[in-house]
Length: 125
Image (cartoon, rainbow, N blue to C red; front, side):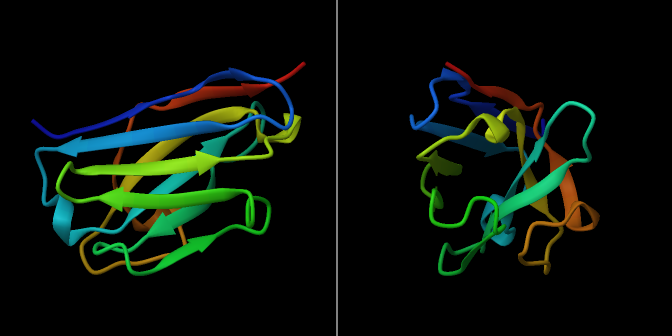
């Protein structure tokens, strides 16, 4: 059964940190780049980060560059998103996604093969 399961979301104060995890199963994990996307209320889902299948290449949207770090542990079929210096405008539902085989970053909805269910991140004092 194909699954992408995000975890680690929650409520954090501005300036705080969270680490999101995305665990995958039921598909060719090692053959796919993995992306993180987010969707704020009333806005389109945007790609914010992507990591290559072997973890050697990463990219970030300008809005998160220097604050967020993506990484992956292929032994655990897991991708992480470390989020530091969080701002209220980072509030959104965060989704991980497995890209189509052969595709790579940046994270783009048109490249997505499988989506996770999402995890809420709220940055507020």
